[in-house]
Structures are given as C-alpha cells and as structure tokens.
Image (tube, rainbow, N blue to C red; front, top):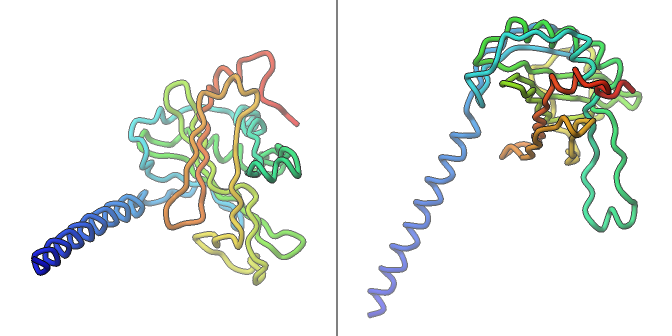
Length: 232
C-alpha cells in the first residue's frame, strides 16, 4: 500500500516539474524574441536614434510626418514621478512630477525622431537612447521607443534619467547596451494635458531591471488644441 502511494506521489511530482519546465521555456522564448537589425538615424557619442523591427505591431502608420517642433511639443508634455508606497507617501507626501525630457534632450531628439518617422516602415518602431555623465561620474540614461498607429502615438519608456555607476570614464569608449543601474527605481508616467492621454500601460520585462511604461497619446488632438502640450 505504501509503495503505491510513493509511486503516485512521484508521478505527481514529475508532472508538476514537467509543467514548470514547459512554462519556463515558454517564458524564456517570449523574453528572448529578437527585434531585428537596427538602422541608425542619428548617433552622437552615446546618444542614439535608430529604426528597428517592432515586435508589438507590423501595421504601424509609417512613414508619417511630424515636424521637429510638433515632436518637441509632445515630448515636453511627458511627465514622470517615482513610485512611493502608501507608507512612504504618508511620511514624505506625493512625489514630484518632473519632465521626462529636458530642454536639451528635446532639442537633440526631436529632429532625429522626425526624420526617423518619415522613413520608417509599417513593421518598424523608432527607438532612442540618451546618455551623459553626471558631475558625480555616473552615467544617466533615458531609453524608449515610439510608433504611430491610427490616431495614437505610442511612446514607451524603459528608463528615465536612471543613474549607473560610478564607473570608468564612459566618454572614452562606446557600448551597444547600457549598464543595468545599481538601483532601478520604479516610476510612473503620464502625458499632460491628460485629456489627450488615451491609455497608460505598465509592466516589467522578466529577468531584467527594465520597466516599461507605455503612453498612448491622441497626438493630433493634442497638437491641434488651443492649449497644446506644456512648453515648460
């Protein structure tokens, strides 16, 4: 009788292990899905704007035309703030909302993003990576991508002014991938005025420190409204 129970228990254990292994294999397969080759549109130091295959959509409305001024206006409307739990908010209050893109970042990104959207195909997205060295020797990075589908501009952010290091002088060499930050603070994002924000999607990429905040913006309405995206 005991031998039968042991056999049954072993069968159940192996079945559970098989399900876990199969599930893990599926997750790893999804995470490791490549996005295809890159086409560089702009590169200066560690700052990079490029086209790559969009793993989320093959029917983007590309190519499309948005002037650097229009893109700049939209970027200025993006706001981010650090995540605080309920106890942290009770002690320190609500976190301050800040611009995701500073004036100098908008000035560098807007022309390149405009050019990229003009030549992008329907199965591509426009990706960007910004990096500079802080006064404390750290690398500060902002990373994301955008695409146009119908009346919506999809803007995804995985890093916003994340700090890395301190480390060696990164201005002396180039790297294809940014370092994982020592501390990856979770953040929230929105677009102002929020009446032009269609939807926000949040998520984390498994086995990485990267977060993904996706803003779906009714960009034409925002640009054509009497009160456009904030400029300050």
